[in-house]
Image 1 (cartoon, rainbow, N blue to C red):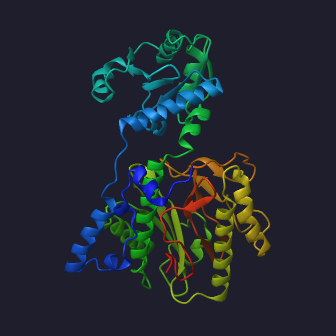
Image 2: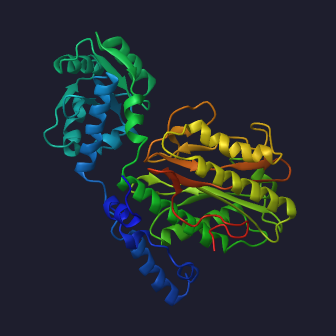
Length: 425
């Protein structure tokens, strides 16, 4: 169903004032008394109206998981401390050698497995009315999981294990959950998390906007001889003033040819490429943005490479639509770069086009050759083509994007429109 941008924002839990474009002039005034006052007002505008997730949101996630379990013939999924447990239950729990978790099942609410001595602490945090079963130090929590499956009517049934569950728990379940078939639970967890709700997309929209605005402010501090640490601090400081958080990993000059950075120390020099890759989060949902600019006047080769990379990003976005395969989006971007002479394959464009993003910076699914998974509305990815020439420079442009009902769009605005306009006009 098509909805207008206004309707989307009103239903996503992010207010129109929160998502509105911020005046760059207000940000540039930080440090002056009147500018500080204006900046404070703008921070309020950015975050006002952002509604946190509610129990109804978590309940909807569990209901979606139950439907998927029925479709995929999985009776339950075991979750332990980590992102998947948080996603489905709103409970954050640390990991240790003592197994704590939840049996997410297709018949009802989760049933919890807890070390006996942790019961009172767990009861402070667990939803009221949900069942908790305990195991003593000399007992096997995995036998307890097997008994839960039997009591649910799933004796001899199938138990999925979430992909972030540690291997010793997986093997414990294989050995001690008698009669239970233990399988990969990613078909359920990834199947739910891979498609974002309107509210989750709203969080990501705002997170990406804050990151870009923080970069925009940080780039104003560029000066000859500065360190990457100084630029990173300027970006983080700007993000805090906007009410969010962004960590940026800058590289200068030849070090930008390393897609994830070089350990070599490089102070900023005239003509250097400046590449910053990083992100932040809003309500636990992440941004991931890369911008590459030139300190000083860009040379002809820098301009040429920038044009190629930007065309590749646009080609990828154009290829995004429901029903297209993940690999087809990678292919669309890679073809532009190869046709321009920067191929074949991964020679200069050294990595896949993009990764899924949401509660984790990199998550299912991935835009990469060989991945024939079909895109669905609500899937979110990074779109980050690049060209890396060791000994000279690298150049990458990265924005997050969401699959819509009829195509795709970039998140957070402020698109890179020219090598000297990293955030548009």
